[in-house]
Length: 453
Image 1 (tube, rainbow, N blue to C red):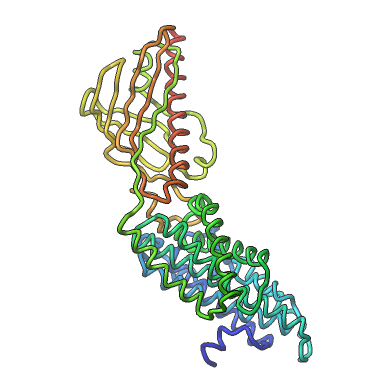
Image 2 (cartoon, rainbow, N blue to C red):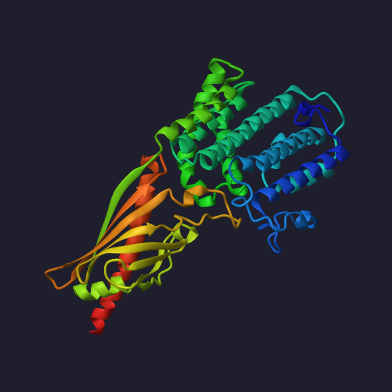
Protein backbone atom coordinates (compact mmCIF):
# COMPACT_ATOMS: atom_id res chain seq x y z
CA UNK A 1 0.00 0.00 0.00
CA UNK A 2 1.44 3.36 -1.06
CA UNK A 3 1.58 6.48 1.08
CA UNK A 4 -1.16 8.05 -1.00
CA UNK A 5 -3.48 5.13 -0.27
CA UNK A 6 -2.79 5.29 3.47
CA UNK A 7 -4.11 8.85 3.66
CA UNK A 8 -6.67 8.56 0.88
CA UNK A 9 -10.38 9.27 1.30
CA UNK A 10 -11.28 7.12 -1.67
CA UNK A 11 -12.83 3.66 -1.57
CA UNK A 12 -14.41 1.49 1.12
CA UNK A 13 -12.97 -0.30 4.15
CA UNK A 14 -14.16 -3.44 5.92
CA UNK A 15 -14.80 -3.91 9.62
CA UNK A 16 -11.58 -5.75 10.53
CA UNK A 17 -9.18 -3.53 8.54
CA UNK A 18 -10.94 -0.48 9.94
CA UNK A 19 -10.65 -1.73 13.52
CA UNK A 20 -6.94 -2.51 13.18
CA UNK A 21 -6.15 0.76 11.38
CA UNK A 22 -8.11 2.89 13.84
CA UNK A 23 -6.51 1.17 16.84
CA UNK A 24 -3.02 1.66 15.40
CA UNK A 25 -3.66 5.36 14.67
CA UNK A 26 -5.10 5.98 18.13
CA UNK A 27 -2.29 4.19 19.97
CA UNK A 28 0.49 5.90 17.99
CA UNK A 29 -1.24 9.25 18.45
CA UNK A 30 -1.51 8.60 22.18
CA UNK A 31 2.16 7.67 22.60
CA UNK A 32 3.29 10.71 20.60
CA UNK A 33 0.98 12.94 22.62
CA UNK A 34 2.35 11.56 25.85
CA UNK A 35 5.95 12.10 24.78
CA UNK A 36 5.02 15.71 23.98
CA UNK A 37 3.18 16.76 27.12
CA UNK A 38 4.66 14.48 29.76
CA UNK A 39 2.85 12.40 32.34
CA UNK A 40 0.57 14.95 34.06
CA UNK A 41 -2.58 13.74 32.34
CA UNK A 42 -1.60 10.16 32.96
CA UNK A 43 -1.15 10.21 36.72
CA UNK A 44 -3.82 8.36 38.73
CA UNK A 45 -7.14 10.15 38.34
CA UNK A 46 -5.94 12.20 35.36
CA UNK A 47 -6.01 9.65 32.54
CA UNK A 48 -6.91 11.26 29.25
CA UNK A 49 -7.67 7.92 27.64
CA UNK A 50 -8.24 5.29 30.37
CA UNK A 51 -8.15 2.48 27.80
CA UNK A 52 -4.46 3.12 27.21
CA UNK A 53 -3.54 3.05 30.92
CA UNK A 54 -1.30 -0.06 30.62
CA UNK A 55 1.23 2.08 28.71
CA UNK A 56 1.65 4.39 31.71
CA UNK A 57 5.11 3.07 32.58
CA UNK A 58 6.44 4.14 29.17
CA UNK A 59 6.33 7.81 30.08
CA UNK A 60 6.94 7.85 33.83
CA UNK A 61 9.46 10.54 34.66
CA UNK A 62 8.89 12.71 31.58
CA UNK A 63 8.32 16.19 32.94
CA UNK A 64 6.62 18.05 30.11
CA UNK A 65 7.64 19.87 26.97
CA UNK A 66 9.45 22.70 28.73
CA UNK A 67 12.11 20.15 29.76
CA UNK A 68 12.19 17.61 26.97
CA UNK A 69 10.57 18.97 23.83
CA UNK A 70 11.73 22.48 23.07
CA UNK A 71 11.87 24.55 19.91
CA UNK A 72 11.35 22.80 16.60
CA UNK A 73 12.00 19.41 18.26
CA UNK A 74 8.43 19.63 19.53
CA UNK A 75 7.38 19.35 15.90
CA UNK A 76 8.37 15.67 15.84
CA UNK A 77 5.59 14.33 18.09
CA UNK A 78 3.22 17.02 16.83
CA UNK A 79 3.83 15.96 13.24
CA UNK A 80 3.22 12.35 14.18
CA UNK A 81 -0.05 13.29 15.89
CA UNK A 82 -1.19 15.26 12.84
CA UNK A 83 -0.46 12.30 10.56
CA UNK A 84 -2.42 9.99 12.85
CA UNK A 85 -5.36 12.40 12.86
CA UNK A 86 -5.32 12.55 9.07
CA UNK A 87 -5.13 8.76 8.80
CA UNK A 88 -7.97 8.35 11.30
CA UNK A 89 -10.16 10.87 9.50
CA UNK A 90 -9.49 9.23 6.14
CA UNK A 91 -10.43 5.72 7.26
CA UNK A 92 -13.49 7.03 9.13
CA UNK A 93 -14.58 8.76 5.95
CA UNK A 94 -14.11 5.54 3.98
CA UNK A 95 -15.95 3.59 6.66
CA UNK A 96 -18.80 6.11 6.57
CA UNK A 97 -19.08 5.46 2.82
CA UNK A 98 -19.10 1.71 3.48
CA UNK A 99 -21.89 1.94 6.07
CA UNK A 100 -23.90 4.77 4.48
CA UNK A 101 -23.20 7.00 7.49
CA UNK A 102 -23.23 10.75 6.96
CA UNK A 103 -19.85 12.05 5.72
CA UNK A 104 -20.00 14.84 8.28
CA UNK A 105 -20.01 12.25 11.06
CA UNK A 106 -16.55 11.09 10.00
CA UNK A 107 -15.30 14.67 10.40
CA UNK A 108 -15.71 14.29 14.16
CA UNK A 109 -12.71 11.95 14.12
CA UNK A 110 -10.60 15.13 14.26
CA UNK A 111 -12.03 15.98 17.69
CA UNK A 112 -10.38 14.50 20.83
CA UNK A 113 -12.59 12.29 22.98
CA UNK A 114 -15.20 12.04 20.19
CA UNK A 115 -12.72 9.94 18.22
CA UNK A 116 -13.51 6.86 20.27
CA UNK A 117 -17.26 7.32 19.90
CA UNK A 118 -17.01 7.86 16.15
CA UNK A 119 -14.77 4.82 15.65
CA UNK A 120 -16.96 2.60 17.81
CA UNK A 121 -20.18 3.58 16.04
CA UNK A 122 -18.66 3.19 12.59
CA UNK A 123 -17.24 -0.19 13.58
CA UNK A 124 -20.59 -1.68 14.63
CA UNK A 125 -22.64 -0.07 11.86
CA UNK A 126 -24.03 -2.43 9.25
CA UNK A 127 -22.37 -2.31 5.88
CA UNK A 128 -24.38 -1.48 2.78
CA UNK A 129 -24.13 -3.56 -0.40
CA UNK A 130 -21.55 -2.44 -2.91
CA UNK A 131 -23.33 -0.39 -5.55
CA UNK A 132 -22.67 2.63 -7.66
CA UNK A 133 -23.62 5.68 -5.57
CA UNK A 134 -25.94 8.27 -7.03
CA UNK A 135 -24.58 11.58 -8.22
CA UNK A 136 -25.99 13.47 -5.21
CA UNK A 137 -24.18 11.19 -2.75
CA UNK A 138 -20.94 11.50 -4.69
CA UNK A 139 -21.24 15.26 -4.73
CA UNK A 140 -21.99 15.43 -0.98
CA UNK A 141 -19.05 13.15 -0.12
CA UNK A 142 -16.72 15.16 -2.32
CA UNK A 143 -17.79 18.41 -0.67
CA UNK A 144 -17.07 16.98 2.75
CA UNK A 145 -13.74 15.61 1.60
CA UNK A 146 -12.47 18.92 0.24
CA UNK A 147 -13.81 20.77 3.26
CA UNK A 148 -11.97 18.40 5.61
CA UNK A 149 -8.81 18.82 3.56
CA UNK A 150 -9.06 22.59 3.90
CA UNK A 151 -9.82 22.45 7.63
CA UNK A 152 -6.92 20.10 8.25
CA UNK A 153 -4.55 22.28 6.22
CA UNK A 154 -5.63 25.29 8.27
CA UNK A 155 -4.92 23.53 11.57
CA UNK A 156 -1.49 22.44 10.31
CA UNK A 157 -0.61 25.99 9.24
CA UNK A 158 -1.69 27.40 12.60
CA UNK A 159 0.37 24.87 14.59
CA UNK A 160 3.41 25.24 12.31
CA UNK A 161 3.26 29.04 12.35
CA UNK A 162 2.94 29.18 16.12
CA UNK A 163 5.86 26.80 16.62
CA UNK A 164 8.13 28.79 14.31
CA UNK A 165 7.15 32.20 15.68
CA UNK A 166 7.15 31.44 19.40
CA UNK A 167 9.65 28.64 19.95
CA UNK A 168 12.20 29.38 17.23
CA UNK A 169 12.00 33.11 16.46
CA UNK A 170 10.64 34.15 19.87
CA UNK A 171 8.28 36.78 18.43
CA UNK A 172 4.66 37.52 19.30
CA UNK A 173 3.48 40.07 16.81
CA UNK A 174 1.63 40.87 13.62
CA UNK A 175 3.06 37.85 11.80
CA UNK A 176 1.74 35.38 14.38
CA UNK A 177 -1.62 36.90 15.30
CA UNK A 178 -2.56 38.36 11.90
CA UNK A 179 -0.35 36.80 9.22
CA UNK A 180 -0.77 33.17 10.29
CA UNK A 181 -4.61 33.36 10.55
CA UNK A 182 -4.77 35.21 7.21
CA UNK A 183 -2.80 32.47 5.42
CA UNK A 184 -4.72 29.83 7.34
CA UNK A 185 -8.05 31.27 6.15
CA UNK A 186 -6.71 31.45 2.59
CA UNK A 187 -5.66 27.78 2.65
CA UNK A 188 -8.96 26.59 4.16
CA UNK A 189 -11.03 28.50 1.61
CA UNK A 190 -8.82 27.39 -1.27
CA UNK A 191 -9.03 23.74 -0.23
CA UNK A 192 -12.77 23.86 0.39
CA UNK A 193 -13.61 25.53 -2.95
CA UNK A 194 -11.06 23.96 -5.28
CA UNK A 195 -13.59 21.53 -6.78
CA UNK A 196 -16.40 24.06 -6.98
CA UNK A 197 -17.88 26.99 -5.10
CA UNK A 198 -19.40 25.90 -1.77
CA UNK A 199 -20.60 29.42 -1.03
CA UNK A 200 -19.33 32.13 1.28
CA UNK A 201 -21.33 30.93 4.29
CA UNK A 202 -19.93 27.38 4.13
CA UNK A 203 -16.45 28.76 3.47
CA UNK A 204 -16.71 30.87 6.62
CA UNK A 205 -18.02 27.87 8.57
CA UNK A 206 -15.07 25.73 7.46
CA UNK A 207 -12.65 28.54 8.36
CA UNK A 208 -14.19 29.02 11.81
CA UNK A 209 -14.11 25.25 12.42
CA UNK A 210 -10.45 25.14 11.43
CA UNK A 211 -9.62 28.03 13.74
CA UNK A 212 -11.44 26.43 16.67
CA UNK A 213 -9.66 23.13 16.05
CA UNK A 214 -6.36 25.01 15.81
CA UNK A 215 -6.98 26.61 19.19
CA UNK A 216 -7.83 23.22 20.66
CA UNK A 217 -4.68 21.76 19.10
CA UNK A 218 -2.43 24.51 20.47
CA UNK A 219 -3.90 23.95 23.93
CA UNK A 220 -3.93 20.17 23.60
CA UNK A 221 -0.31 20.05 22.39
CA UNK A 222 0.76 22.19 25.38
CA UNK A 223 2.06 24.91 23.04
CA UNK A 224 -0.30 27.59 24.37
CA UNK A 225 -2.80 27.97 27.17
CA UNK A 226 -6.49 28.65 26.95
CA UNK A 227 -6.19 32.28 28.13
CA UNK A 228 -3.78 33.27 25.37
CA UNK A 229 -5.87 31.47 22.75
CA UNK A 230 -9.05 33.18 23.97
CA UNK A 231 -7.43 36.65 24.01
CA UNK A 232 -6.10 36.27 20.47
CA UNK A 233 -9.19 34.57 19.03
CA UNK A 234 -11.20 37.69 18.01
CA UNK A 235 -8.24 39.12 16.09
CA UNK A 236 -7.36 35.75 14.56
CA UNK A 237 -10.98 35.15 13.54
CA UNK A 238 -11.22 38.47 11.73
CA UNK A 239 -7.95 37.88 9.87
CA UNK A 240 -8.89 34.29 9.02
CA UNK A 241 -12.21 35.41 7.54
CA UNK A 242 -10.38 37.99 5.46
CA UNK A 243 -8.03 35.28 4.23
CA UNK A 244 -11.03 33.07 3.45
CA UNK A 245 -12.54 35.75 1.21
CA UNK A 246 -9.23 36.13 -0.63
CA UNK A 247 -8.70 32.37 -0.93
CA UNK A 248 -12.19 31.70 -2.27
CA UNK A 249 -11.88 34.53 -4.77
CA UNK A 250 -8.46 33.29 -5.85
CA UNK A 251 -9.56 29.75 -6.62
CA UNK A 252 -12.81 30.77 -8.31
CA UNK A 253 -11.36 33.49 -10.53
CA UNK A 254 -7.87 32.22 -11.25
CA UNK A 255 -8.11 28.50 -10.54
CA UNK A 256 -4.39 28.24 -9.72
CA UNK A 257 -3.98 24.70 -8.45
CA UNK A 258 -0.93 25.48 -6.32
CA UNK A 259 -2.21 28.66 -4.78
CA UNK A 260 -2.59 27.21 -1.28
CA UNK A 261 0.92 25.81 -1.26
CA UNK A 262 2.35 29.10 -2.45
CA UNK A 263 0.62 30.88 0.41
CA UNK A 264 2.32 28.62 2.97
CA UNK A 265 5.73 29.85 1.82
CA UNK A 266 4.73 33.34 2.98
CA UNK A 267 4.74 32.11 6.61
CA UNK A 268 8.50 32.10 7.24
CA UNK A 269 8.81 35.37 5.29
CA UNK A 270 6.20 37.15 7.42
CA UNK A 271 7.59 35.78 10.66
CA UNK A 272 11.22 36.48 9.79
CA UNK A 273 10.60 40.08 8.68
CA UNK A 274 9.22 40.77 12.15
CA UNK A 275 12.62 39.95 13.62
CA UNK A 276 13.91 43.17 12.05
CA UNK A 277 11.27 45.28 13.80
CA UNK A 278 9.83 43.33 16.73
CA UNK A 279 6.79 44.79 18.50
CA UNK A 280 7.72 47.08 21.39
CA UNK A 281 5.93 49.77 23.36
CA UNK A 282 6.85 51.72 26.47
CA UNK A 283 4.08 53.53 28.30
CA UNK A 284 3.14 55.06 31.64
CA UNK A 285 0.08 54.32 33.72
CA UNK A 286 -1.31 56.56 36.46
CA UNK A 287 -4.06 55.89 38.99
CA UNK A 288 -5.21 57.97 41.99
CA UNK A 289 -7.59 57.51 44.86
CA UNK A 290 -8.90 59.80 47.62
CA UNK A 291 -8.52 58.38 51.12
CA UNK A 292 -10.21 59.66 54.29
CA UNK A 293 -7.00 59.50 56.33
CA UNK A 294 -3.87 61.53 57.05
CA UNK A 295 -0.71 61.32 54.99
CA UNK A 296 1.12 59.25 57.62
CA UNK A 297 -1.80 56.82 57.93
CA UNK A 298 -1.72 56.34 54.17
CA UNK A 299 2.07 55.94 54.31
CA UNK A 300 1.78 53.23 56.95
CA UNK A 301 -0.75 51.38 54.80
CA UNK A 302 1.59 51.51 51.80
CA UNK A 303 4.68 50.45 53.74
CA UNK A 304 2.84 47.71 55.67
CA UNK A 305 0.69 46.39 52.86
CA UNK A 306 -0.27 42.97 54.16
CA UNK A 307 -2.44 40.48 52.24
CA UNK A 308 -5.30 41.66 50.01
CA UNK A 309 -8.37 39.71 51.17
CA UNK A 310 -10.65 40.26 48.17
CA UNK A 311 -10.86 37.43 45.65
CA UNK A 312 -10.07 38.48 42.08
CA UNK A 313 -12.64 38.40 39.31
CA UNK A 314 -12.23 36.85 35.87
CA UNK A 315 -9.96 36.78 33.94
CA UNK A 316 -7.55 37.11 36.90
CA UNK A 317 -9.14 34.15 38.62
CA UNK A 318 -8.41 32.13 35.46
CA UNK A 319 -4.65 32.71 35.62
CA UNK A 320 -3.85 36.34 34.76
CA UNK A 321 -1.35 37.71 37.31
CA UNK A 322 -2.81 39.79 40.14
CA UNK A 323 -1.26 41.23 43.35
CA UNK A 324 -1.78 39.40 46.63
CA UNK A 325 0.46 41.13 49.20
CA UNK A 326 3.65 43.12 49.61
CA UNK A 327 6.49 43.13 52.15
CA UNK A 328 9.35 45.66 52.53
CA UNK A 329 12.58 44.24 53.93
CA UNK A 330 14.29 47.08 55.77
CA UNK A 331 13.63 50.81 55.40
CA UNK A 332 14.98 53.75 53.47
CA UNK A 333 16.65 53.89 50.07
CA UNK A 334 18.03 50.48 49.10
CA UNK A 335 15.40 48.49 50.98
CA UNK A 336 13.94 45.56 49.03
CA UNK A 337 10.23 45.20 48.49
CA UNK A 338 8.71 41.84 47.62
CA UNK A 339 5.48 42.17 45.67
CA UNK A 340 3.75 38.82 45.81
CA UNK A 341 1.55 38.05 42.79
CA UNK A 342 -0.57 35.05 41.97
CA UNK A 343 2.14 33.88 39.55
CA UNK A 344 5.26 34.63 41.59
CA UNK A 345 7.22 37.39 43.33
CA UNK A 346 8.33 40.76 41.94
CA UNK A 347 11.53 42.03 43.59
CA UNK A 348 11.84 45.81 43.84
CA UNK A 349 14.47 48.17 45.23
CA UNK A 350 13.46 51.43 46.97
CA UNK A 351 14.94 54.51 45.27
CA UNK A 352 13.02 57.28 47.09
CA UNK A 353 11.91 57.05 50.73
CA UNK A 354 10.15 60.15 52.08
CA UNK A 355 7.73 59.15 54.87
CA UNK A 356 4.27 60.64 54.41
CA UNK A 357 5.12 61.93 50.93
CA UNK A 358 6.81 59.65 48.40
CA UNK A 359 7.89 56.04 47.92
CA UNK A 360 9.57 55.12 44.63
CA UNK A 361 11.17 51.85 43.63
CA UNK A 362 12.70 50.16 40.60
CA UNK A 363 11.47 46.72 39.63
CA UNK A 364 14.35 44.26 39.57
CA UNK A 365 12.39 41.25 38.34
CA UNK A 366 8.83 40.53 37.24
CA UNK A 367 6.77 37.42 37.90
CA UNK A 368 5.16 35.68 34.92
CA UNK A 369 2.36 37.73 33.42
CA UNK A 370 0.00 34.77 33.66
CA UNK A 371 -0.34 31.19 34.70
CA UNK A 372 -1.77 29.69 31.55
CA UNK A 373 -5.06 27.86 31.90
CA UNK A 374 -4.09 24.37 30.82
CA UNK A 375 -4.58 20.77 31.96
CA UNK A 376 -0.81 20.27 31.81
CA UNK A 377 1.76 21.05 34.45
CA UNK A 378 4.12 22.59 31.87
CA UNK A 379 3.46 24.33 28.59
CA UNK A 380 5.98 25.71 26.14
CA UNK A 381 4.56 29.26 25.75
CA UNK A 382 7.47 31.68 26.41
CA UNK A 383 5.27 34.80 26.36
CA UNK A 384 4.42 34.43 30.04
CA UNK A 385 7.89 35.67 31.05
CA UNK A 386 9.77 38.68 29.68
CA UNK A 387 7.30 40.01 27.12
CA UNK A 388 5.66 42.35 29.63
CA UNK A 389 7.75 44.28 32.14
CA UNK A 390 7.14 46.83 34.86
CA UNK A 391 10.16 49.15 35.08
CA UNK A 392 9.34 51.22 38.14
CA UNK A 393 6.55 52.32 40.47
CA UNK A 394 6.04 55.66 42.24
CA UNK A 395 3.67 56.29 45.15
CA UNK A 396 2.90 59.93 45.92
CA UNK A 397 0.76 61.09 48.86
CA UNK A 398 -0.78 64.56 48.56
CA UNK A 399 -2.77 66.35 51.33
CA UNK A 400 -6.24 67.65 50.40
CA UNK A 401 -8.08 70.66 51.75
CA UNK A 402 -10.79 68.51 53.36
CA UNK A 403 -8.24 66.70 55.54
CA UNK A 404 -8.14 63.67 53.28
CA UNK A 405 -5.17 62.47 51.26
CA UNK A 406 -4.72 61.58 47.62
CA UNK A 407 -2.64 58.49 46.86
CA UNK A 408 -1.26 58.33 43.33
CA UNK A 409 0.49 55.33 41.81
CA UNK A 410 2.44 55.86 38.58
CA UNK A 411 4.11 52.92 36.86
CA UNK A 412 6.22 52.51 33.73
CA UNK A 413 5.77 49.43 31.56
CA UNK A 414 7.14 47.74 28.44
CA UNK A 415 5.21 45.41 26.15
CA UNK A 416 6.74 43.24 23.44
CA UNK A 417 3.57 41.58 22.12
CA UNK A 418 1.83 42.97 19.06
CA UNK A 419 -0.04 44.17 17.17
CA UNK A 420 -0.07 47.03 19.64
CA UNK A 421 -3.47 48.48 18.68
CA UNK A 422 -4.99 45.15 19.78
CA UNK A 423 -2.92 43.98 22.75
CA UNK A 424 -1.93 47.27 24.37
CA UNK A 425 -5.52 48.24 25.39
CA UNK A 426 -5.98 44.76 26.90
CA UNK A 427 -2.71 45.15 28.82
CA UNK A 428 -3.60 48.64 30.02
CA UNK A 429 -6.96 47.40 31.24
CA UNK A 430 -5.27 44.61 33.25
CA UNK A 431 -2.82 47.14 34.75
CA UNK A 432 -5.68 49.46 35.65
CA UNK A 433 -7.66 46.64 37.31
CA UNK A 434 -4.66 45.49 39.36
CA UNK A 435 -3.77 49.02 40.46
CA UNK A 436 -7.35 49.74 41.53
CA UNK A 437 -7.24 46.53 43.57
CA UNK A 438 -4.05 47.68 45.33
CA UNK A 439 -5.21 51.27 45.89
CA UNK A 440 -8.58 50.15 47.27
CA UNK A 441 -6.73 47.88 49.69
CA UNK A 442 -4.55 50.78 50.87
CA UNK A 443 -7.63 52.94 51.32
CA UNK A 444 -9.36 50.29 53.42
CA UNK A 445 -6.27 49.90 55.63
CA UNK A 446 -5.66 53.64 56.07
CA UNK A 447 -9.30 54.50 56.75
CA UNK A 448 -9.57 51.64 59.22
CA UNK A 449 -6.55 53.08 61.10
CA UNK A 450 -8.10 56.56 60.94
CA UNK A 451 -11.37 55.35 62.44
CA UNK A 452 -9.49 53.55 65.20
CA UNK A 453 -7.99 56.87 66.28
